[in-house]
Image (cartoon, rainbow, N blue to C red; front, side, top):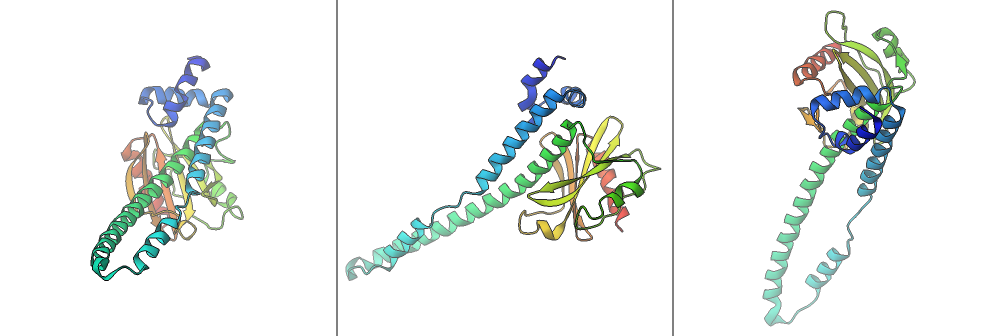
Length: 251
């Protein structure tokens, strides 16, 4: 399919709305087309810039100060009880509103981290150099990260499995350095992201989970002070089997 036709589907692909068979063809095309892969990276950078800009907004405290002044202001005795009741109702409304905003932010931050992980995975697929260290040997890939990230991790033995190690690269999640490992199973590529749990704590409300992120299957868990994310367009069972191999390697 010509680039002109593929470029009509760039946004659909990034949003995870491209049908499975077309997505596989598109990802094959991305590995050989600098124009389309560059366009994908440009759109992802713009998406991240918008997400960062959205986090900078902080609601004004002027409304709260105005309410506090009104409540504290002396009122005539005859109307004080009405103002007290109004203040109680208003306070209850504020508490409910703050709780609602807090829960919304928690869900938004949770969605944000999985969206960022999906973007990092798509970026690697679109890149002409998806890994910085190319090797199927875990004894080559693991030492390469020493001095490049502030932690160490273990890699599983894959000789008796269907998975093969492609390589790895240093990546960043909200300015936090980590490792991205790419595994292959049949025609599917799966990204495994590893970060220090302490470095992410307080930034994202994370917990162990399995699910779908955009059009990808994913799984995340914490083990040995590290946070793992496994994501790819492989089946949920493949994602789970690779996750089990990674968990057993860290035991």
